[in-house]
Image 1: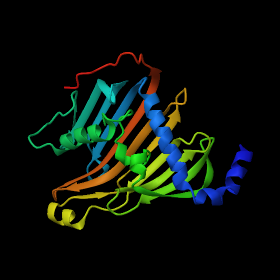
Image 2 (image 1 turned 90 degrees about the vertical axis):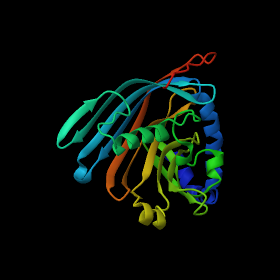
Image 3 (image 1 turned 120 degrees about the vertical axis):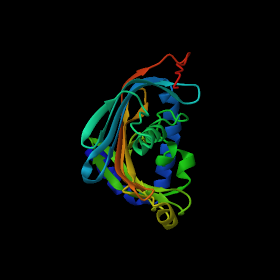
Amino acid sequence: MRGLALLLIAAAPLFAEDAAGIMERVGRNQERAEKLRSVYLFQQDVQIRLHRGGRKLAREERHRFTVAPGPNGISKERVSFAGRYTDGGKTVEYDRPGYKYKGLDIDAEIAGDLVDELTADKSSRDGLAADLFPLTPEQQRKYKFRFEGPQSYAGREVFRITFKPKTRESASWAGEALIDAAAYEPVLITTWLARGVPMAVRVLLGTNLKHLGFKVAYQQVDDGAWFPVSYGGEFQLKALFFYKRTISISMRNEEFRRADISSYITYDLR
């Protein structure tokens, strides 16, 4: 490992000019990895919390899914759910997604929408929204990359690469990626919002986002298949002049096993 590290340090000037080349290899490997992911079943735990000011819990939901390959993406079956909300200092538990305890329950709407949008992209092989991280060749065309040097992370030699949008309009995220130096697969990717909510939206609608960003970690399962195993983020949301929450969401994938690729499992998600 030490020899590899020295070799990477010596080659740093070369890689500094070719960060895009490294990410291009990552993009090709991601296309291959998505095909490999399509033959796996796994368990997925998703948790979302919404806090009022002073970190007082407003709502919390925990979902557990069995995730199966489908012809064009994934299918998810919810196998357990637990939720609770607080109102007037009292905590009430509930057992079904989308439960509303009053006519206008913004927390219920936001919790359900975020779980669906951020962890249930049916067109992907792992559920993550594809536009959050610049991994696929299509997404990479929107970004500029810079090689920041080699380093060790969790016992692996990695390349550290930072990225930002090519233009203000091309993408919304900036961040850094740790790329496995041997496999050219992502190990850890951290993103943050590259630009704030437009002033006109904040003034006219009373809406703002702060500290928006996400982090996803990958591991090799077997047969060269790399999966996102943990994912999460936290941000502050102000909306409609009166609504303010700190929202955190986390996801964990585990218990991977190969499925029979000759047949697919289809779930009725109604």
